[in-house]
Length: 268
Image (cartoon, rainbow, N blue to C red; front, side, top):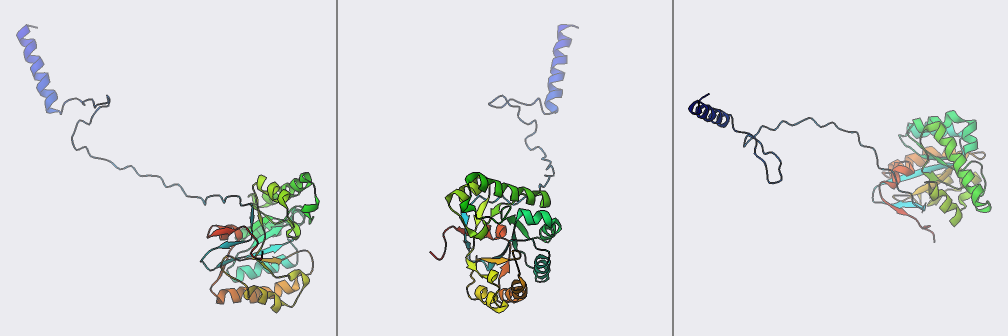
């Protein structure tokens, strides 16, 4: 090719490249700039990842929740019981309410279908230890064993580790609280004691709740550990009375999400 022809070819290539917008230019940090001043942006669809509730923090111990929302938590101890628990589950379902059941691991092993039913109905299944032992009289090793065995039994049945522990008799000390917290569980006590374990008249159980309830109350009841006919008969009065006052009944785990934990006994 002659020099003149080569020169003409180079000019032609330059003109052709210029007509096509030229090569991408380098930015200040060596990154190529867009060849066009106003490129068309194609929005890629963003896959929506279902959000899960954030896990609750481990609170040392809990008596109630400070909230302006009209919500309370009913809690039932010492079950499951083959006579009382099914009736209580039926009543909760009839009134569209959900509770927290602090179950004994040993009882859950005998009546696993009741534990599964409670969870399937939207109730919370929480830990009451393996046996009904006063944990303040046990060594740290025994306390840990009681909590772990109860928790393991519940996890096997409902496939979710409990986040709450209520020590039997509500008996606790620093050792019990620290053991529970170390195992990822909050010690949950109560702000209203119905003393239903003494089998008072059903109306008396209901009046102890309805006369003292406030937003964020945690209420102590029992579905196991003995004759609980008064508790079962009181429950419709309790649920109707709470509904008339505008309260919703939710598990403890949901109550905690709606306010600030009360970690000191309200009566002290």
